[in-house]
Image (tube, rainbow, N blue to C red):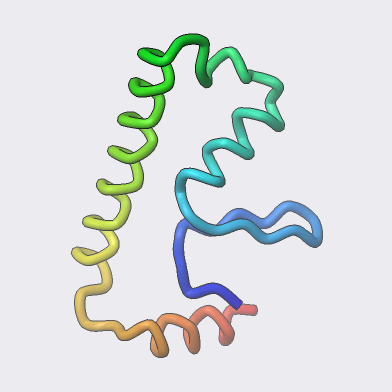
Length: 80
């Protein structure tokens, strides 16, 4: 089981980490036009994805500043 968030569950498949989830959603929605056409586009998309990832991680520290990975894992196990 993963401690990392965000977490996407689709049927029996479980995904974690912002960038793989964003790529999965884009490809599942058949919107690969949102990804890369040129090297410059690729850089822009990567900057956007890494910015989202960075914001999410900073918010996590604000929301759960005193929780260890073990505590987060236990809470997640209690929910499941």
